[in-house]
Length: 311
Ligand code: UDP
Image (cartoon, rainbow, N blue to C red):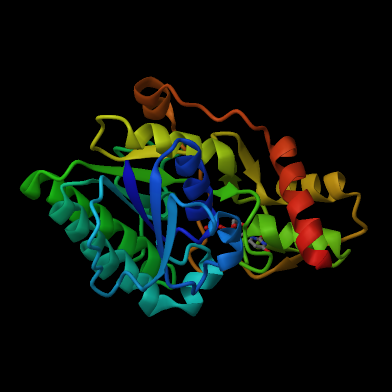
């Protein structure tokens, strides 16, 4: 297939580029590099099946070539990033999704939206199943991401129902791995870089809030299965093993053998108290489940962080 990936120079987008090229697809990566980086795709630049276009997909996307699939992954995705780029986050979730869907419609291509567990907000139900409508504060600081992605899902379903575009929606739960930005502000990169430097580990709130962490290769494998499936409704992809944030901090101190101490900081506004995917649908319909456990995943990520913190 000829596949377009918006946000293809980002953490997840670049891993998707790798998997698609390994499976003999042609990949056009579009990214404006506000949170993505050419370092993530530098190894692909001489691959004749790969093309990079620097462009902001919130502006009209013009491509003369044939396209079989459009994967919309462009967006700031860490809470710190979307607080720093609130308008860009809203625009790429709304206008960027509209432009990407428009491209898919024009090219008669299938479409896959990178959505998020943030559509469930601070959930009142756990684990979260796809039929849960969520508990989101539209006017809080996280609303710029949550509502943009909820709008993106609504827009995607409208193109499916009204324009018959073959659309798919993946709801991505917390994911970690190589190519995460060292300073992107999320728990795994913060704790790993703090542990490597023997700095204080910053736990927000009591640390009793929970998240469920998926290693990037598992997530990408699930997304590829979804792309090749006939499912048009949203599917959760994530690892259902749930951790408190304090336990994540302790595990990272143990793995790194760090001298870091845990310190407590204010909990960000509207920080979800629990998050855990119900992945029954992915298991039954995609025959997918995560394989990498947290200590193996963290070890691989740690290796990447050690290399990049030294440089
Ligand atoms: N967190 C923390 N210390 C940090 C960064 C994050 O305690 O240095 C907490 C954050 O408040 C949240 C959880 O870790 O409860 C996961 O945060 P992250 O930014 O990784 O992603 P989120 O799941 O909130 O989108």
